[in-house]
Image (cartoon, rainbow, N blue to C red; front, side, top):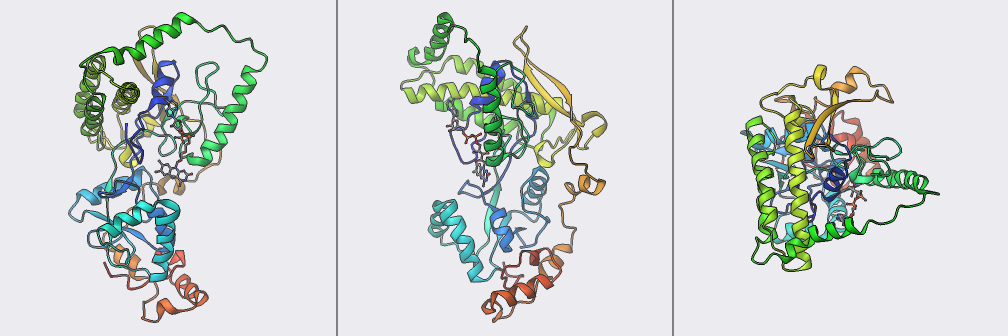
Length: 413
Ligand SMILES: Cc1cc2nc3c(=O)[nH]c(=O)nc-3n(C[C@H](O)[C@H](O)[C@H](O)COP(=O)(O)OP(=O)(O)OC[C@H]3O[C@@H](n4cnc5c(N)ncnc54)[C@H](O)[C@@H]3O)c2cc1C
């Protein structure tokens, strides 16, 4: 649904797996990210973080202990953004020039040259200005949240002979490592499954029917242009499903997503590109319905902003320490939802570990202390040899000094 960085993201895989009869899980656990305002791409606070950069509010004060993103981090971010101290910024202007140069070398070369050009075009410099951030639209992606096609440890879905890996599979926070690891595991499982099997002949009637279905939009003259349907669908996703969530809004969204079936029937594609866009509208619609239904089904709040329900603001482990799974009912073709138990932790967690997720917020008044606890800045500070620099920084007991990078006046905004 969301287009985090890539406008062609349309949920093709989730939709196809659903129609093939596979179970999907945790679809209510959205992907939401901090973006650079107007640049609309990731702010990468976790790149500048180890160098001493922070997420701060408009007063330049830190309000959370970790900038690495999670549902809880996004919740703290959202509250600050929409509260009296918003908007939210990425602050690097307290860092020494050589540290900023090092950050720029990563963010503006290895990561994205366009980011450097964006800032230069507005005459903004990390050493002088803070970088305004915003909240992205919602999306579904197992790599960045916990949603995906339900698999076991062999990458098998609930459909015999169908496998999922990477951002498709329900391997939370898998990223590239998860994609590579499960790519190999799922491919090995699939190869084992297929070895020595006689494949059934291709059913020509089925192929013809599918071809007719897909090409129907190309034969419809004067139909609605696909980008108009896509725009409306994506907008409704954000109008009705963007957290904080509430039942009435999501039910209203569901009405739109149901009615969108009629729009899909009226799309007219005039080129192969539009034919693809038309197919993508169907995928976006399916994912929107899955997201609305799963979010409505889980009547509690969990994962910070990702499933924050204004009408059920508390986490309810007694009833909801479970996965919400969905699939297409083979008899009715309707979307059905149900719970699956959570497997026991492989590595036991103590109570402190379990609570730490919810404890990101820096208490009121503490953020000044957190920032000013670094070694005092002097004009010579940046020029110190690195060894001495590290020694002075690491000796200061603070969150910000733990990164061991050069910093200058921490109160500068
Ligand atoms: C902005 C951003 C930053 C990231 N940063 C990091 C990072 O720093 N470190 C990290 O480890 N991970 C990072 N990730 C996550 C990582 O990129 C993904 O988890 C990983 O690429 C997923 O791999 P995949 O093969 O499952 O999916 P993808 O890489 O998305 O590959 C899916 C492929 O399928 C194709 N496709 C889609 N639909 C169809 C269709 N209908 N028919 C045919 N082909 C189709 C697509 O074009 C694409 O080539 C980042 C992701 C994003 C978006």
